[in-house]
Amino acid sequence: MNPDDTDKGILYMLQNDARDVTTEAMAEEVGVSASTVRNRIEKMEERGVIRGYHPDVDYDRAGLQLHVFFICRAPNPRREQLAKKARDVNGVVTIHEVLNGEENVQIEAVSTDTDDMARITDELSERGLDVVNSKVLKSTHIQPFDHFGEHIVDEENHE
Image (cartoon, rainbow, N blue to C red; front, top):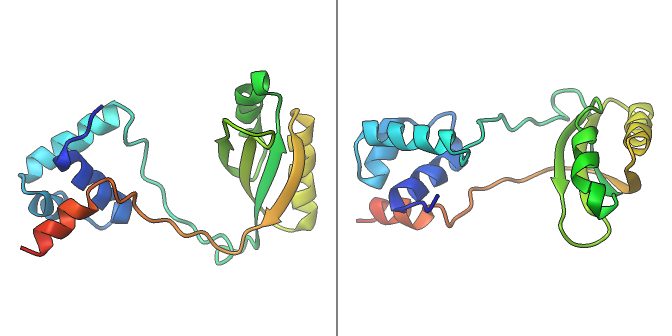
């Protein structure tokens, strides 16, 4: 897919606040009708450009104090297979496959305490990943990719 300015504006606004932005508000910002916005979103969902809408959970406030980032190694020919196996470990929330370097699988997990963190480490190892390091995350900050229309939305607001 080669997104045009309308698609980029929609993607930007969805990344900024998918829960509270309406198709009408997006339409006004990008200069099209609400039905065009709905159609564009549907097409991007069908093509897999938009893969889902997920809450941004503060695990600490949800009573899960240990949000952990595991840095792992996997043999390159098996990286994808081992990353998929890691999804079966209770507590794993995100898996990143990295193309370069030896530390080529990075995993975010949530654990209830240090014993649970050790269990996750053991289960990742049992699935063939070499856990090189783990770090407890304090916070995560997410923002929309500005290539997806920040300038489009901002231009419309300043005219």
